[in-house]
Length: 325
Image: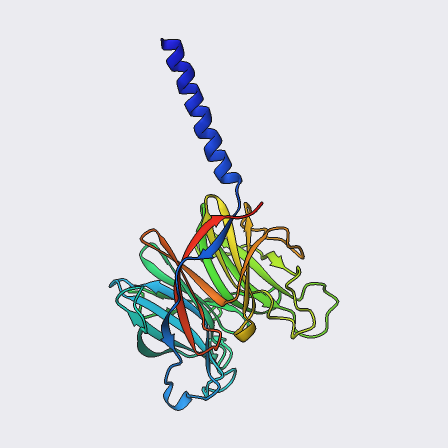
């Protein structure tokens, strides 16, 4: 009898190991799980309001008081320079429609090395109870911190600027940070300005850090492939990276196009530093949407994205399902 029980136990263990192994060998892809609802519309910027203004790259996070915060880069405003600033909204619940406008939250500070009107794409994570925002200053990535997740103060380095790193391509922007193991992985975009012999002119990079202070050299993690638009201005086919960890696989959302022809493609990889360079081998899906942010709240994933009319931001539930092999 004991021998039979031992054999049964061994079969169960082997089966469980096989089931787990099969899960981690699978690829996954995102799938929209609900109808969309609007959470933000084109804001009133007072004297900066322009008929051409557009809410674009944004970040969503939950503040210390439980409210949900949304900051978006608004471009083509009348603020001057590169026409961009951060505007904010707030909601009691993530699933609320038409969040409450909170006004202009931040403008570029040229005295700290940020380009006039050049703020881009805020993203917020928490570390040791502190909210860390990494955002674009046009030429570089910058940092600000907050104790409550609502009021942020810029972090100034030894050189008297807000820069944490830049390059290797121009216009480093669209930062998104996730902790994987002991390292923070900061994904961001850049493109080459001017004439070049390089085959890839727009790419997504990653730098890692144990503490969000010292950073590794940049690794190109995705660029090129069938969605690369080498005949356009050269910078828009690898933007707004967002990475989600699903069963030890990593899903990269890569933005290719904004507006009426908006396009976002996704890749699935077991290596968070490799989603394919000039290849579609790891591509698993594509959405007709732009600049998505993925939120995991109480076990449910949500996806926020720009409206195709570029006059607001929308939200839906999101699932991750097995991808075709």
